[in-house]
Structure formats: structure tokens, C-alpha cells
Length: 371
Image 1 (cartoon, rainbow, N blue to C red):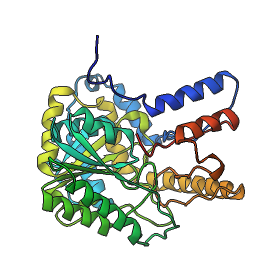
Image 2 (spheres, helix red, strand yellow):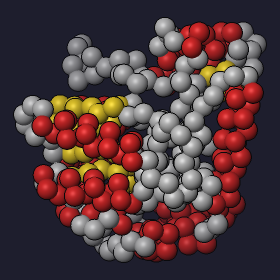
Image 3 (cartoon, rainbow, N blue to C red):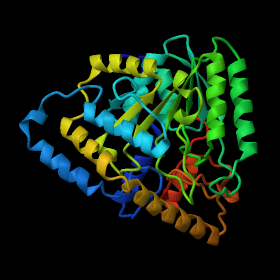
Image 4 (tube, helix red, strand yellow):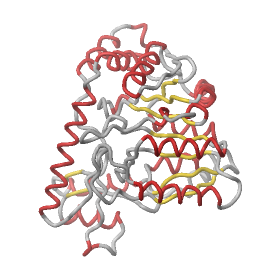
């Protein structure tokens, strides 16, 4: 049988990397995996305890609500008000998703169809590229790079922002139909690039003028280093007219396997996803929702502790590589550093260089500027 929807998909990059790891470990090598942002810090104890408690109640074994329990959505609204100064209506502007990847994929089904177009940075987290394609849309990619200098908490990289918006305008102007959706994610995966609220305001102004929807995957909302605080796009003036944001408990709360995230923002877009998901699922396992509610309400300091751990790891990695002559810009957000391939290996692409590291050095990382 010909599986036409997926027949042209390239091998998933993480599958390639995992196969390299498995082969090396079968040979007895101790592989240092730097490639997959899979948190190794334990989830908050209060989340684990509340999960166990709720799981023992048979009432929680039944179907739940696709859009999330009311108290969970209220906890998200409280967190957004407290952390970002953004006011959200829990009934209309927040819905639970089974991880941000699921939420993003189905959101593309809501926003796009065959004949539409979306603008997506390159490189990007893979689903940002393939989600619009699965929905049948055409893709216009704009180049992303890491920031070339160390930024303080309040620095503005004007050159970086101007380059981004020049590429954004070009992507809008080229071809027909005009794009309906812009996908962004800051702090950026994988380059570690960061922006300020003024940048987000320019994005919102751009999209409002063109009647576009901007989707901000805020995966690293809780990971700003050296005093830098990643801005929610919803703080920008007029954002509720055109913007939605995905917030996940994966990184800041180290709850990757729990699959708990939220789409927040523009009422029409959020409710459109609610409608679609009502046909597709019955929400996350209810004890997970209960545990997430308590965690959001009572573990306010946990993301700060996690962030401090990743900041110390970033410093150790940057300093260690610098000692061996591999100089890398130090990002002020995310859990990645974007390392240029060293000069002696510049003829390799990123996967080839990664394979070389596994075979020769037992280290592992990857990045695909072109997919």
C-alpha cells in the first residue's frame, strides 16, 4: 500500500541520532548525548505525590475534559498573570493540550489547509516545519542564526532583529497566496537566539496589518539566564487580536513525560482548537491534570531552580569547549548552545559531523540548518 501522506517524509532526525546512539552503546561505548532536549532533572515532588494520590481515586480513571479541568485552566491564568503580567480568561482563552507538540500539530489543522502558506524559521524544531506541511500548506522559510555576541539581560541585538524582519518581509512578498500563519519560538530551538518585548511588538504589528495569526511556541519560557526574562508575546499591545502561545510544563517544571501543555491567547483560535480536539481526544489522564494544577499553584520557585541548573551547565560547556579552542557564543536562554562546526570539518554537514563525533569522540549533538 502507498501511504501517500507520509511517503515523501525524510527520516526523522531524532531517529537517525537514536540509531547512532544505539549502535555505539551496543559496542560498549559510553555516549554523551547532547542532542535531545530531554530533561534529566526530576519532576517536582509535589507533582509526583499528587499524581499518586489522584491515581488511587477510581473517579479519576474515567474520561476527562479535552480542554482541561477548570481548576487547571484557572491555575494557568494565575501563573500568566503572576509571571508575565498577562490576563487570560480561563473559559475562552486557555485550553490544555497533550504536550505542545500535539497542540501545535492540531493547531495547524485548524489554521491551514491545502493552498495556504505559512512562514517558519529555519532551522526550527522539526514539528514547526512538518506541522504546516501535514495540514497541506506550503512553507516559506526564513533563515535563523545564533546571536554573534554575548548579550546582557537588557541588551537589544538590533542587527539580529533587522535581519529577521527583512527576511520576514521578503517571505511575505514572494509568491501567492499570502501566508496566513507565522510560527516563531523564543528563546529559539536550536540556535538559542533571544528577543525582547519590542521585537514581539514588531511581530504583532506585522501580523495585525496583514491579518495573519502568529503562533509562538514558548517552550523555553522559564529558561532565561543571567537575569534575562523571556517575554510572552501576549504582553505586546494588540496581541490578543492575532497571537496564540504554547506554554509547556516540560522544561521549566521538568515534566517532559507527563505531556502537559496549553494553548493560550486569541479567543477565536483557542476555541477553534477546542472544537477540533473535542472530536479527537478526551484530554490528558485526569490525575496528571490534577497534579499539574497543584504544581502550578504551589511550586512557583521550581522553574527558577531548574533554570539555575541549566545556566551552570551552559557555563561549564562553553568554558570547557573554549579551553580546547572551540569558541561558541553563550546563549542567554533555552537549553542549547548553537555550535558552529569547527574549521577542519566545515565540509561536513551537521549529521555527518555528529556521526564523526559518535564514532571518534563518543559525543552527540546535531542541528539541521536545511531540512
